[in-house]
Length: 154
Image (cartoon, rainbow, N blue to C red; front, side, top):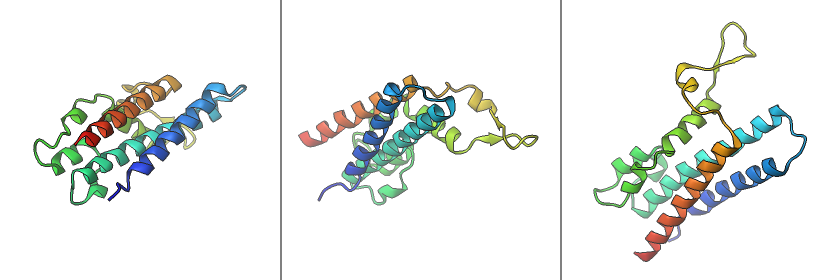
């Protein structure tokens, strides 16, 4: 039986790649448009990552892979020695999900509804940039490719 998550992971990675390519080749793009595209690319990546965790859960016969939202959800749902240890060492996954949260749930200043306020944890995170999105894309694409190849060997 094929994995229902695999094609969706590929779709979201492809959407991110297209957005990054457009950002790299676009001329005369305004700051507002650039920010919207960067945020869109980041959301595609976070969704791809979450779907990939579910893909792994499906491959490992986790009872309800749709309940996997974070790495620890997968780790907790898998039997010990299931081969998900590499995921725990990926230092970019938590910042990716944190950046997604900041895009989806910005703090709004009570004094002026038009201003987005940075909370204390947001101030400690790296600013969203094309380079940052490309690093996440490279890391996730590499992880997906490596782990899919290792699953094919078994």
